[in-house]
Image (cartoon, rainbow, N blue to C red):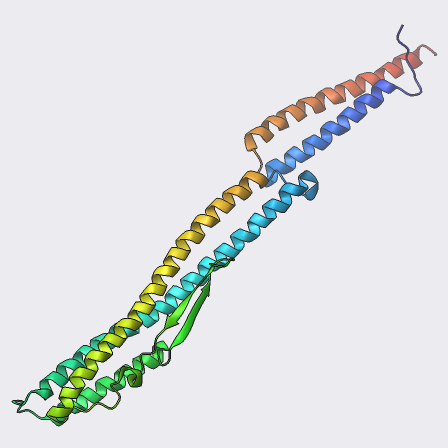
Length: 265
């Protein structure tokens, strides 16, 4: 024969304990549904949280690295634009020098020299604006690791380095020398353009790689941190049912005590 204790009321205590457990599960489910995360505090999954935070930090580094690379591309674009202008100006210098070098030229070489000097001055200005006066190292941090930095050297393009600062085409002989010097300058500029173009390509490749790594790392973090909304919705329905049945069971257990006490009246 089953015994019944009015003092302890084990049935009510068990119902209360089960209801408390259900309430804890319900609160966790509501938190996950409202936040969208499976892990909302270390107690949910300490190891998973540590890994997810590590992935999140990696994504932050990659995103900043892509911004760095885009800034670097902007800087290189300015230099590339200046180099294009310098190439055009060198073409004009070559034209003027060739015209003046002709023994049969009957015009005013002083006029050609004046324009020639103006073009040299403009090249100097372009070089100053673009920061191409000296050979310089160029380095952009894109991501961590041994290969995470894109760098190289951009050659100088000043008039002295190009060998055009002291050219004079006011005589046929001087103009002939200028033709050769300008041709050499064109080659030098081509080398600098190659430096800039190589760096631009490397930065674009680095951005593409960083984007791919960022997407994959975000996906990995999501698999660890994010909640399964379908599963949590099912859990919500389950816990609501358990809560209602638990309350009913607790009420029934307490009612048993009241029934026994009524016999003593």
